[in-house]
Amino acid sequence: MLRTIAIALALLLALGCAPRRPAMSERLTYEKPQAEVGVVQWVESRRIAILVVGAETPRRYLRTQETRVFLGDQEVSWAELRADQAVRFQSVRGPFSPDRVTVVEILQGEEEATVRRHVLADGERSERIRWTYRRNLHVSVGRGS
Image (tube, rainbow, N blue to C red):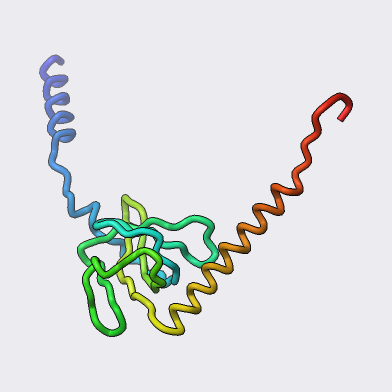
């Protein structure tokens, strides 16, 4: 009896200490990437936050080794991304982690202006709704209210 418990404990210990495969956490799912547009809020070496049309807060994405950045038809480095740029991007959900950006295209010209207009219009509309809601709040203080 004692021997079977010792074997079971050794087996559990071996399974618990088994090395994890880090490649699993980096592997992307096979779902089709979703294309969206937005304005970059901030960029770090491994992450990016983009305010998407219709969203109140920026969405955060992780960068992978497969992430590609384009300016026009030319591929550029991740360092070319700056806050306040209008972008078109594709992302997928990782199997054990948040969304990961796969392609970022820096927009220029009329396309950039259109995306900015839509993002700013949505931001102003949500701000107006928020202030209207706050202004219409009624707070009663006192007896019998």
